Length: 179
Image 1 (cartoon, rainbow, N blue to C red):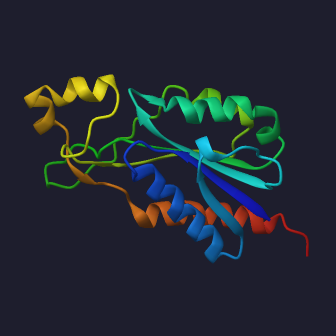
Image 2: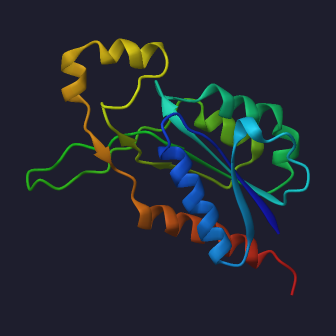
């Protein structure tokens, strides 16, 4: 079984998630490769798909959403899982513990329905205000001193959660294999 883990990433956090998903699938004995959506010329030859995007302004990156829409018929005929990354962690409770506050991108339901996705999962991302701004919204935010200190910084990706989700995909796929 040949699985494509396609992703759109701006600063590398989503790419890292996609690569960990592909690695977890390979560890389960499946043939998986992680590629940026922009480099995927054809979805032919793949038996299943995991597609992810960084979420900015509560939406998937344009190239990822376009990839799903453009390949909707082919994707809908195979097992598909979607993931988003981008929220930067949640507020803390009175004991200082992080609270899971997940913002689902506005287009996630539409994209999931279009390809009959088996699941859509949101993972926390990573943020550093030292990184180069990409896009108008990020450039605007970088000019606002209060925004630089208001956004939580760090790597909030939960690797055990990502691996557990990918392991669930592997179980679903291997259960459907003959013999």
